[in-house]
Length: 309
Image (cartoon, rainbow, N blue to C red; front, side):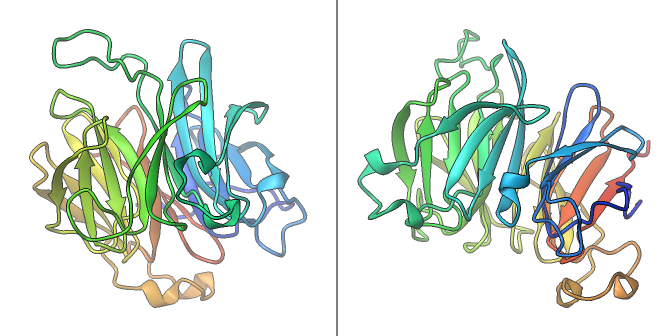
């Protein structure tokens, strides 16, 4: 476990590190709130595969930085950014040029104003997704937005940004969510489904891509924040001080860095316990199976867990 893997220049200082993703070249993109001591206001920092700083951008997201999703598409590679304070979701190039801004879901009829909408994360249906018959999936490129800090709805848009539908909504019953903080498309079963990290309900929930409930995962969950997949593995950064790996049948493979140290999140770096997590907020696999974890700590932290065996 390599804490503080990402090496920042003196002009930059992490705030709470909220989102992480990796592009096809192995470059690691980190979204953070920006620390008050930072002379740069850029909320997105990019690092090479060895942790060296490459560039930064996104001063307009300072303070509201949240989810960050990478997507390979016919037109190239793109990032999807959620800003829960400004109520916006944007699609950009890897260097930050705006491609598309998604309209807030006024058309759902569920919001009195845009201020009630506080999106936390985005999932994109892969452009190579297939249906049960092995044909191209009708929802390739569709975008699902989790209103995790707002009203707990999930909104679907097509690849061009047109609003389609809303499902989920606040509650504990099947098909309902509470703080749907993170989400991803899970194809481990052979059929792509949406898996939602319901932080307040302390569970994962699977939905069909049409928005129908398809199952819960409650065992081994504390406060799941987000999800990623690689092969048969499901990766769950859990805000309550650990990262969890589940197998194809959603049975426990391992808890990583289980620290029970959440109370340290606003403390000085010197008080952090090596080898133990405090508040994992997002995590992802790289192409080699290594895991990158960012934490909701006031001074930010990026940790790499190297795959062994």
